[in-house]
Image 1 (cartoon, rainbow, N blue to C red):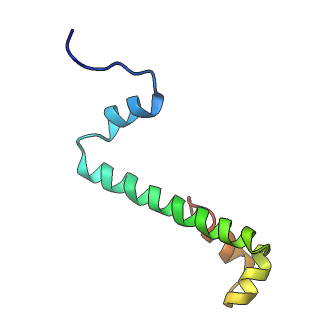
Image 2 (image 1 turned 135 degrees about the vertical axis):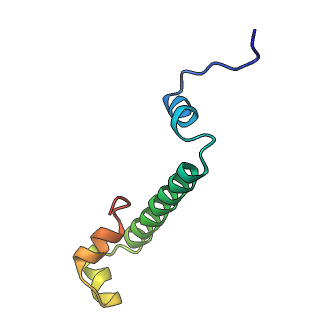
Length: 75
């Protein structure tokens, strides 16, 4: 045997094939991960406070569409 552990995990396979060993891609992936965490935190905190996007927007002096974009990690 060659000592490599085989996997059927698609995420592991894709990471090994396209990300691993490429510092630029690793940094980009980390940035996207951070955006997703922040978007999720905004959503979680807003819903825990039982606020609508419009209510939160009024509290912070912006519009509902801005809150929507903040909660969208892909924006």
